[in-house]
Length: 116
Figure (tube, rainbow, N blue to C red):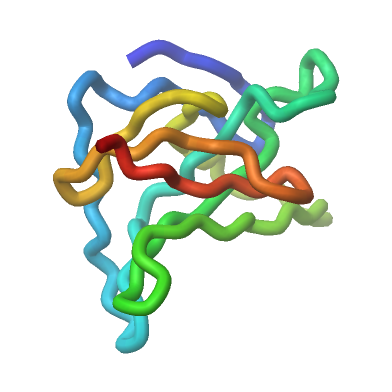
């Protein structure tokens, strides 16, 4: 694994080769991954701001596989550093045995396109 970005609050490393992202957290109406995926490569992204956008990955019977942005916040107290995986727009990742290409969606969101 390579370190892609290192900020005071979190470090971003590359996904291990062939890593399969599991959706192990059952919410009753959907399943999500415990992994936070940080993304670089958005259009008009300023240099030095790569991997700031974090996303949770999930799936349900209606929409298939999706991602939603995790908000950011400033805190008054120090917290333990978090460790996340990073990828870029256009990268291919595997979620539960299926390969997907990460595509940019409106408003600096992402969507997954299944590899045919």
